[in-house]
Length: 252
Image 1 (spheres, rainbow, N blue to C red):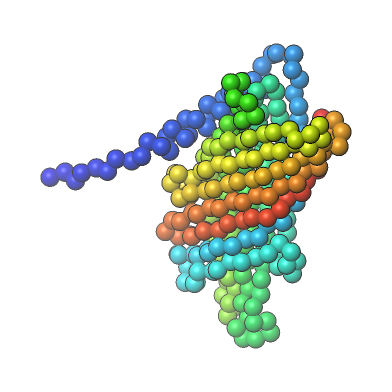
Image 2: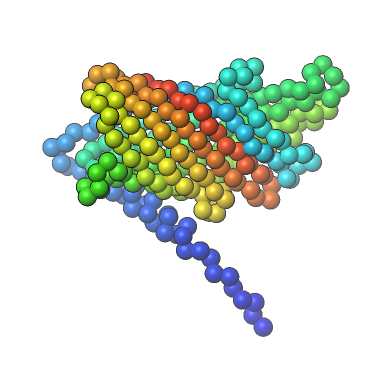
């Protein structure tokens, strides 16, 4: 007697198809021969003062789960940070690339036989296409891929188990944009990812205010929240990052 087969949800497939369509549309529009509307490029180096909270565990190692609670402003724990965004826009279509690197390290029971050092190092790379439907004012659709490369280590009693995991999730969402004055502009973004394709789920939200200094320069203030849960047989990463951002936009 054959075992009944469970039906897998079609949602991940639809998400991937939608993501591919947005990428194809962005690429086609950005590299079309039309010259009536020029490209608008912008690079934004920024600082994300993110606090990191949650749990990590190396299930394949003989090490306990690590409860993580790092505050960006505890500079003794901050071991490195770098982040930047690049965008290209033309007509209704856009494309953006975002890179974030952050590392935290903390030591407990220093100068004792039980001295313990924990370290969390992460790289997040995001590629996305954006589309602004002509029929809907101030609203854009966004779809893309978010790659995360996470390393967690625990040093205790001359042992240093270390676990690294890398995964890539599709995500989809919306961006609401509203000019407040000639100089100030508001952008609200929310997206969902994961869908069980690699991570279990990913939730990302951001509220941003941009002050346009000139046609070339702008200052951006934002608050961002990113929650990701990834769990396989060898590695658990259930972490949220949240905090304020400040960046300098440079258009060319």
